[in-house]
Length: 176
Image 1 (cartoon, rainbow, N blue to C red):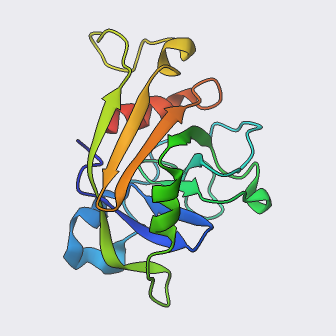
Image 2 (image 1 turned 30 degrees about the vertical axis):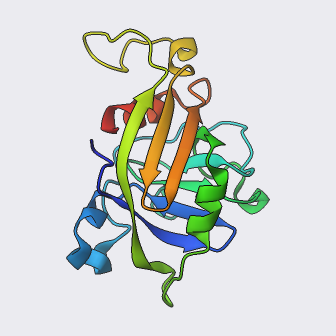
């Protein structure tokens, strides 16, 4: 339930949407959105491209080893940032919902005017549970998982790329 109640708080119309910050659970902490859940994971560099539907770890600018709970979804291809962020999943269903989220009104700082809440993340297509979830599964097993982000604007379904970023995939699954 770590993502439940968080929001998509930053968006660039038809560019990207950003979410996963635990601070966004508190509507009164708007000035701190984008600061939570960072500095937990080291970069897992891969050759994946920032194409439509790529899900990447957010990081502190200039600090590749600062990822954590935050992530962003590419609504359109973003070749200018290829190789700069850890891509750990792909949207396999719901890209039009993500696109609609990108069209939400933002203020001068690029923050969403209205709250777009991740009401629940569900893990589906899961293999048998182990003693420590998501810590012993092989890359092949991790790739079978899908996550459904139920948002206040619709569903976004992710498939994961653990062959490229296994620790980011494990972290996302644990938080979900």
